[in-house]
Length: 167
Image 1 (tube, rainbow, N blue to C red):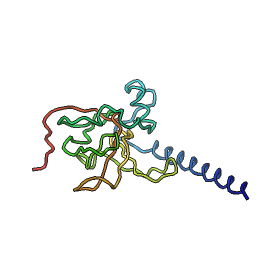
Image 2: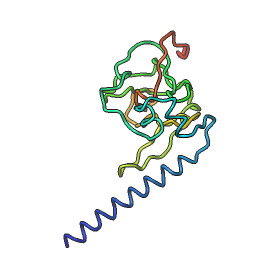
Image 3: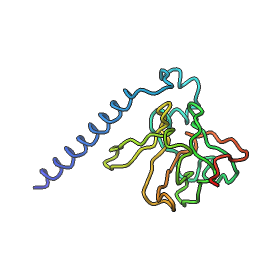
């Protein structure tokens, strides 16, 4: 009896890994405006940026350079420079990662179903280069109720007056 439970558990784990690999392969074939080889990305990005943006890694909570950044400005994609999020929509989520309740322009981010690690989540990627930014959850503040939970290493911040403020 124990053997059948162990076999079922191992089989479920393998199915999850296969599903995760199929998801990654499918996403690797997506077409984006900015496309580069892995070698080109590795030359342009730091090892941490490459791991997060191109290999879908995650930085350790409370260690990223922007989780406690409260300056006014814009957060850009660390891979291609696309404007993604404004400091006006950044909020303290308590998660240890920079969190926002909406992107500057919804066309600049793409949401993809992520079934890795035996979970179903919504991955946030840059719509221009396909770089992994983080995930979006339905536990954010009003008015959207969304929490875009992002990796600092996937972003570049430029301080200044934020021209995206809603009047």
